[in-house]
Image (cartoon, rainbow, N blue to C red; front, side, top):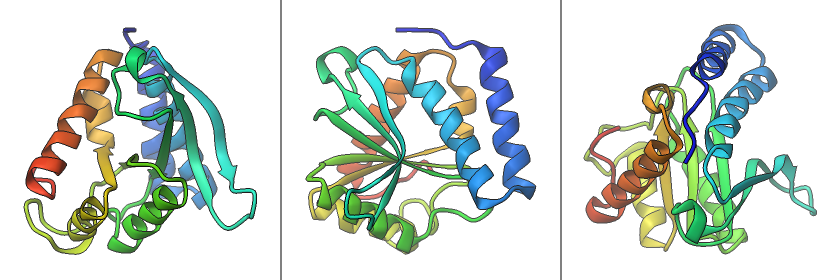
Length: 181
């Protein structure tokens, strides 16, 4: 797997932080999507197919859609990886988790990623707010893996990103919630 160009990664992180404080919703989302696309495109077996994908019936939008070859990427199961990017001052809300869960259900996807600048609402280890809805979605058969900007800042190699995603999914499926975010 590939090492990251740290200069490029730092530029993208700076852009997320800058727009997160004073950007429009569009520039905030694009900055986070740029960072996430950069990080995940370095994983062998992942191919970014769509950005700002609008469903054919125009009822929902997906920030990033990757084609996943699991035996190459070692990342989750299934050939489609849906990613929602949140570059907001507030943590991912229960409603935002619910909406993303419905997107996974509509596409028959067992796993999806939500990336947030600030984390997940509620307290770690509880079943309240966003943490609670992640647990509810899990019981309905949908693992919503949450990563934060702080997680992405620490990553130096694509293999570390795959390992982090795997650990977060394990944490969610073992405990029914997150204890580390």
